[in-house]
Image (cartoon, rainbow, N blue to C red; front, side):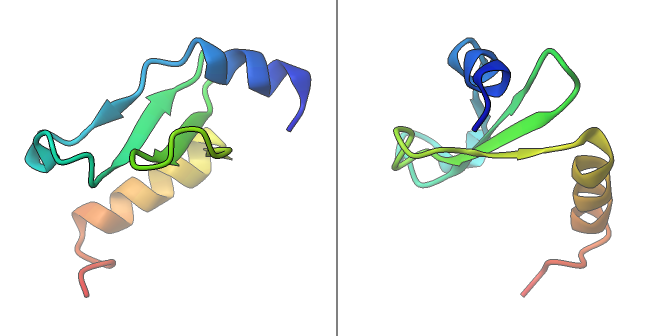
Length: 71
């Protein structure tokens, strides 16, 4: 991961769904100041998160809202 991304992730404000409660079993997302979005496993926040461009994130959210990932 490049130095700029690392710095952005260090100051990121991570969010998780309220449905997860206090269990910690959730995926957390953070908007980065350059428009990208970080995504990490809340059970292992020390691991490197995935970072997505705004267009990739928007496509995923659109598909999730349409039920395309309902298994």
